[in-house]
Length: 300
Length: 159
Image (cartoon, rainbow over all chains, first blue to last red; front, side, top):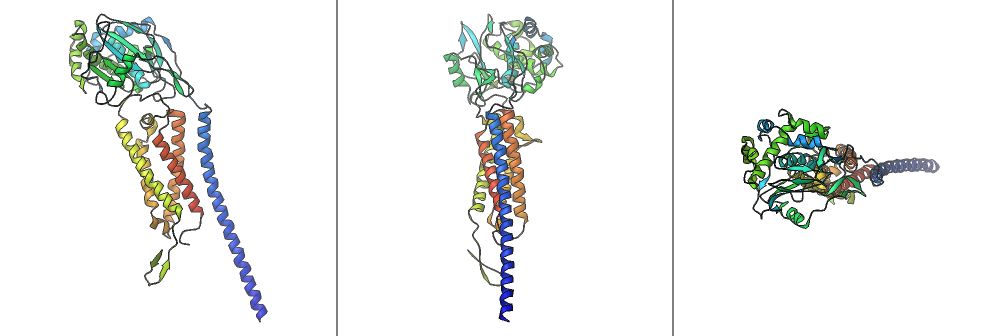
């Protein structure tokens, strides 16, 4: 009798031990599965970082860079007055704001200071209206062509470059600074132009609230110490897939969205510049489109 | 910790342990950081400007085309994720005998970690900039994933 009870008890213990072992094995399996999932995630994230650090998966910039040919510069200077008039400035979303500051001059003339960089897609967009507006007051030479970085937003936006360019005008002086190229070297865009100390001081002083929306952003444009603006006046998306020549051609057509954005913004820049030149030249500053665009100029 | 049942029997409650409390703390931290990023998205995203040339550049990330998914700001999705995780990590939902809070927690962190991998890829290979606050969110999500997955593999708290 007692032997039977003992046997039964041993059998129960064996079953219990077996169940406990199965449970332990199941828990171990679940834990290994969980730790395996964590390891997979760590490997995936670590792999992404490692590939990036090794320089893989990077898109390089595409598109030509060089000097703007004469036909391009001529096209920018010969936009018909009727196009500027038809486009107006009603659709312009951002405009330079008036500031109270010492006059910015060079060679006895009001000076326009542009600070941007070749990698920057918003600089790529804004160079077009800045160049078109300044071309109504003088002539550019050695203007470059380039494109924004291929690995930034709005990649490879076709544009001009002020690096190495010169500007002559009886009304205005111009300094264009492109601080970097559109190509990275060791994780940073390669340096290009270094702003003169006075230009850097202007940038540091007026490229921050309340003069502009956010501090240190580019492109930054100071118009004779009377107006400043930071950022693009339209989205670079508008220029996607276009070459410099296609953009220049579009600027003549008042129905083109590119003309509406670029020529419209150029009208507003022109209105600001006319306030620096005492409305000279009259053929530009007395047009209805420019006079109307003056109403777009903001106050900081 | 003790609890009196309806029949008047006093039962001892097992402590939650450090893992659920850590999950709750990380979720609350995530809510704070995601709320800040959501604010940044809506305030900084309107400027059509390049902030600077550095690799660490939060505005470039939070205002990039990858900052939205189907029109919804990813910062807002992150805020929703951490808010949900905070609720799911409250002590009563760790103790409940219902399997659903645990399943939802697991599903949330799996979706979260997949999304974080996508965002890390976008930062490294598309936007070419790193946002430190976004990196904090990514790290919190990865740690939450680890904690929730490991906790799901352990015996239930009230077993």
